[in-house]
Image 1 (cartoon, chains in turn orange, blue):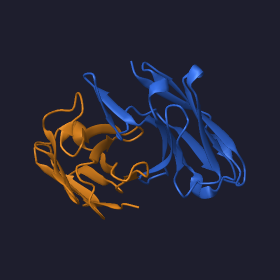
Image 2 (image 1 turned 90 degrees about the vertical axis):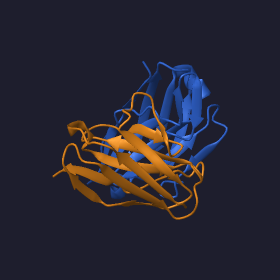
Image 3 (image 1 turned 135 degrees about the horizontal axis):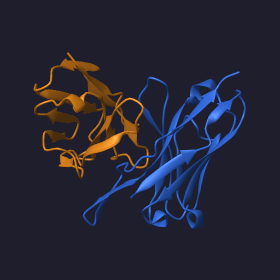
Length: 108
Length: 125
């Protein structure tokens, strides 16, 4: 099983600041990594796929980077609606998909 | 509009059974693999099971293998999860999700999109 470890567990920032979220895989997943956003009471929403491609309708302030074992989700300037929990997910070990444990982005 | 709607959740005693359903609309259901993903209260996401478009390939997480059965009815655009021998640790919101993200005429396998709104399963005496 490929384990995804996200850091930090909680990130406290203010609107307008830059957010950097990390996801580390226990073995290489190439570029087969996605990021999801989940708000309270809602289903997850796909933000980034194949490590760096934004899904349709996702604002340009969201960007993904990395390959192999180390990945980053960056939100360039936080908007109030960006405060949520973010999960990474790998598809390298199809069909045994795994998710990271999540990073909670909270308002400081 | 592409949509998934789950139903069938509820309160069940340990050792009991429950059958979840997921109704799909807005896309050609029979062309895509489908999955169940769950989320325990206050916890992260856990992949549960996957079924290919024609039901030829079925996979389960070790945590549910031998107890849960995934199935689909392409004529009814529906996905199912039969859950037997339920345990307290199966308490979670269960989401159905398509295993392929599609945009602008291109599709990308292995990414979950869309998701249903989820249905809560509570296993408690």
